[in-house]
Image (cartoon, rainbow, N blue to C red; front, side, top):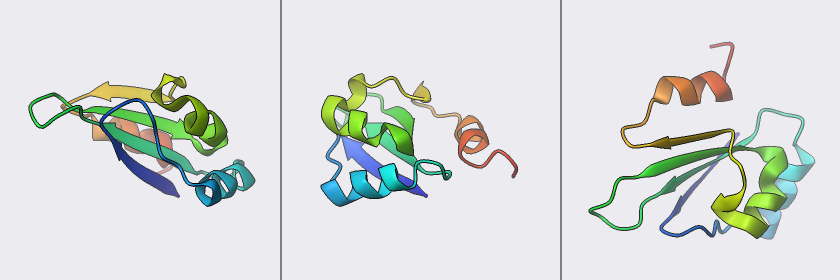
Length: 87
């Protein structure tokens, strides 16, 4: 399961039921994938977190240390190796 989010600042708006679900399923392959883009002219950034980081991501946003942080252009092979390593 991958929870997808888009932000233009450091706050990540995870709803309480999303945090609850991710925390309850923290021992499964669940992730939070956040794309950050300040405006239409700036380069995007990608942040990948594990589900067990949901509370920290909710409270501290992108200040939470991610499993992976990339600047555009993204290396999707690396992202997929993390979220589905046996594929």
